Amino acid sequence: MRESVAASTEIQNPQSPSRTPSSASSAHRIETWLEQHVESLASHWVEEVLRRANTDPAMDQLLERFLRLLSGLIPKAVGADRSIVAPIWREAAELYGSLGAQRGLAAGEVVEEFQVLRQAVIRLLFEAPPARFGASFSLGDALGLNRFLDSGVTHASIGHTDTLFFALLQGNGVPQVPTGQLVAEVEKHLAVIEEELSAEAH
Image (cartoon, rainbow, N blue to C red; front, side):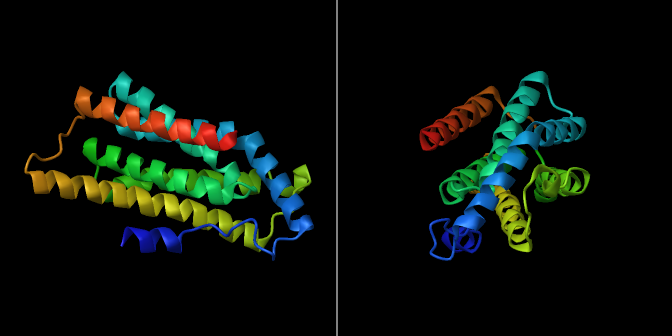
């Protein structure tokens, strides 16, 4: 089931023969435009999630690290590395959903936290249109970016559901407040994802 979901959310291969030099140049300009605004996207997402989260300082720090990592992947959703970044994005989103379950969030609450990012991207498109920065943002670009964000929501839900399922199967339940051990495990997994991303970048 997970493989079919992943396949349905896969981003188009940038090496496809249909990808012309002009479209590749446009994608590069859009990627650059997003990179110029990724800090504001990340800051808004962090602020909104922490405002709703009501967690302790250690968890706040972990959430900020998580959200900034995910935000940093957004520009690559439209760039030449999209097919490389897509599986890392899905893996990170699943881990975020799992952390949401460990934080005691309902599935809908995890989705709402992820939707904050989509809303921020939409607002950015209106407040700072790519055309102002010399980037042509086509309907195809919009649909591709939307699919990328959708895959984040989908896999966050998968991670949340999987965590609840295994907790029920093991009969130990999910704590309303993550234990130090759980936080350490998430941090370790997050570090692995960061290393994967760094390796791909080089």
